[in-house]
Length: 266
Image (cartoon, rainbow, N blue to C red; front, side, top):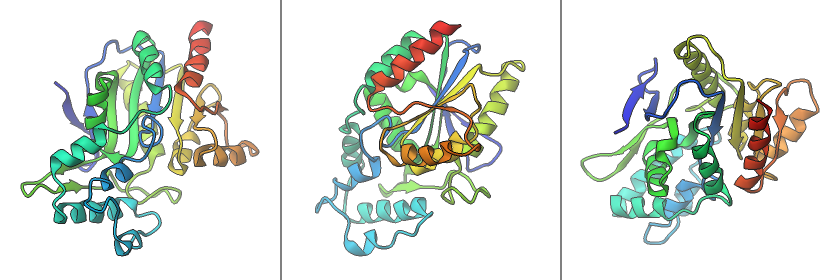
């Protein structure tokens, strides 16, 4: 059974799962919404409402950079409208994976000796854990970094922010670069000082830019083609700020093809 591990901040929640060896050469970070799955979990669960959409006053209450706060209001509204835990659970399980992502997971499972997998997402633990378990790939991930969420006694899904930070580029509840850098430091200590040979980051959104900026020349950013991460990386690529390789993807097969070549290099 997985256990919940806590980092140095009491609000930083990550799910730890036992995965094979401690000497994998490569580390892969995955975003979740619109990367592993084909849409946002938040949009999918809203369709469980009686009217299948949010009222205008609630949609218009969103403030830029405060999405976690907005979703807290959305989930409270859904509870008030009588949307059950079972309905939310079912809505999450029904979300299709992105094209070719299950093939990517199949490949990574066959190469567990080489790849350590981590999710870093601004969704929430309940949605991510529910979907990964239903898809049969939960066991592949060593850790999940996301916003804590659990149902309370009244049946409301209570969402909390992941952490606080001082990064001006990121939403107030999560800086993925902080997570990536702290994880790399912690894992290198646990690996007796041995760093990962390469780090890969697979994402789609604007909040996937900040962690990608921490990647080095030997690493690779995989932005979903024509999504915000891809468009923004094309701008960064023109400057000396961005060091990593950039491999846009449409299907998980595109990522598999690239990883196979890297594994063969040895």
